[in-house]
Image (cartoon, rainbow, N blue to C red; front, side, top):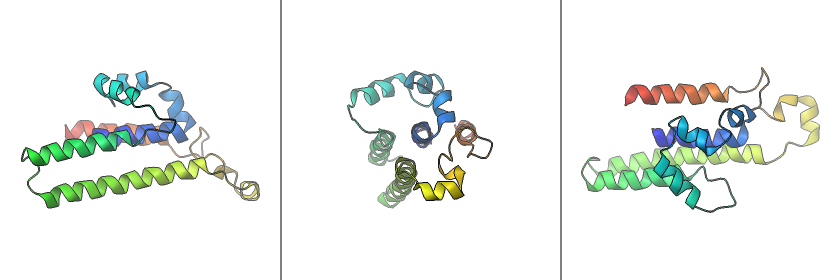
Length: 143
């Protein structure tokens, strides 16, 4: 669950000014407990000109494969179910990033101004910081 929360934070940092202001650097992400110092080193070591929100998915896949090998995941069907759900979530993150990356034609923004930046800091924008806090609280309860 921590990797899901980390991925959410990374994708929200890229699309939401409110979340980016709250977590302006990766140091803030580590301090908040979303990423360990060792994970930060691995994350920084990976050089990419693109957003690296997908890196925690790789970590999750490796961890799940290790858990299967050690018998903590009972069978391959369970592993496949976990991977399918994680891939579905990765696709949703990609879709969200794509929506933010592709500009809205001007004619639409004159009708619905909120389409310009629905993840901003206005009262009518999505509460991305609330989503991060909620997911973190749920994860903390489960651990």
